[in-house]
Length: 342
Figure (spheres, rainbow, N blue to C red):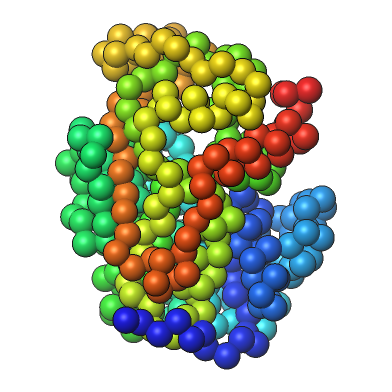
């Protein structure tokens, strides 16, 4: 079993995607555990204006992009950086955005491997369980030994880009002798989604704008628990190369049934077969009406995104809270903070 004894704290942890939902929780966990978090952000002034920074220890920000590592490594206030948590990603599902998604998620990850080499740091790469866990069988689960489901997701830019990024990052890390840890969470929910992206479907449901669902299923995990596991992976003595972070497994309709009591709204009762939903979404997309999600989202929603883990509880002290607790906290936070719900 890998050692969970961390290397002595004192160095800093660079967090990409620091201004996002996951980055916020990673920075909070680092601060809570006495670690110096440094956020890599496009606009340091904009980052400094965020009203939640005090909650995460007012971390240092380094201005720069994934593509210009030489500049921020030379001139940024990184301190003695011994780990990078690469949580930045472009999460767009439409095939219209494919070029941008592939470029950002693949090239950006490879630049972080090079940055880890330049800094002599461990790289924790936040990927997704969707690289291996996408099935037609509701009971199927993918653990850390599962093969890529490339034949299933090859037409879905986000998930396919993550498969390629994982493969190429492993190869480059081997070439450069970089210690790489890949973390694969499923859908992440919880309080603090200040951009209202990860919670967009919950918000749509809470506004009464979700008239039907498609039969499918997925896993979701509390983002606070996922962030904590990522921080353990950054510090632990001898990590494994891959960790999964499964949470609560449920069908799409069951998910909204779980959310309904906290949202004070009944769950959608209409379950539409995939084909009619896809044709309707495609037709509306072609004429520029985006009242329904992109057709790719309909395609993905019809699958079952099951994930399991062989190692994370013991290695990462990963024992996530219940789905009910996560949904209660998420919805309470949205009621207080989302303008569309007021």
